[in-house]
Length: 111
Length: 352
Image 1 (spheres, helix red, strand yellow):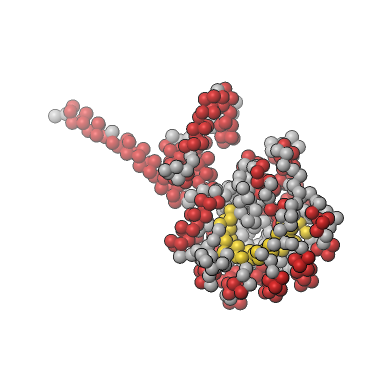
Image 2 (tube, one colour):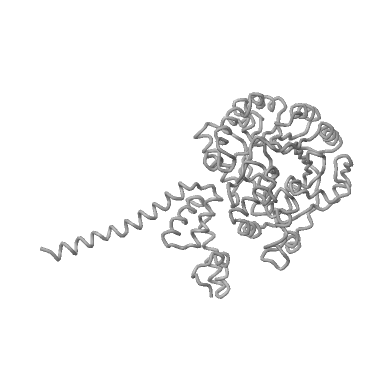
């Protein structure tokens, strides 16, 4: 057993999840591939969204994959970092907006 | 990364046998992690690769260059002195006359630095080929006053200019090609635009070459072309015709970079995973012959840099026999995965 829970080479084995459930695996990967096709959003924009979400869900495989995907698409590091700040702002904002609840409880319980 | 060629540094990778040893061992050793290119061709029933009709004669005029790019598969630089002799150049002209080659492609190094460059272009253009390409690194056009009139010279001879520009921003370009290269390249592109190159309706073709600045593959050629066109127009009012995406092959200084940055195995794995059987049918070695400065013949410029001469009794211009050459099989090694990955790669960009 490897000492680390995450192994970078496991990313290449992602497709193996279909081995134990071929139908669902196929449906997932068909859906996945369709999602990233050019649509109302460009494939380039979707790659940046994926990179931001990858950091939000803190998936090391996804961070590796979508950093490389961005490089191949000619996405610059400044664009990548701005996308991360969007994720960070939403994530930070999600904490802070609960401050309203905190404030309401506080106000209700105090004279 | 050094600022001199591997050869000048007496680096072990300046020895082509050493490069081939690396490409044939390790992850590609018998029973290793990755299949050799030859085995991949067998598995996909796409080999051996044989020449089709010879269309492109690519002459490497010499390895001298004003730049020392980190990714250069030629190991070119100011310290390289190899140059094609006038005798060999005349022999090339004879072959142009004798064959139905429709594209003449001059490369280097910086071909413009060859002392007989203008003479040869003038003579070759008299023979008349459909497409006469000069591969320019752009900065040479601004390197010295004696080169300033080259855009006009190209125009007179209706040269198809194919220029390297790794990216439309300064940082990535300068990291790959050296400090100041981007701004000089922009000046050179403006000079080419000024005489009509790249402008619609001028008939003067100016194409750019994009190759990734690191251990990753090029994305979709059309999408990148759109990005380049938009950015160069907006930031510098520069126009060009087509963008060619070219994969960096694990040879020479790019191989040095891959090993030094510990990217070699991952990069080769990426190339193998991206193997596209459809690309094999259109790889450039099927319609190109590459000539080294000393007259030896190769299936492509990459094989030239690995000194993998054509697998034919005819290996030199002096013995040129097209019929015999056309019956050969193309020499392959693991670097060939670079030309068959994804949409494929060639001196004319993607092939699928």
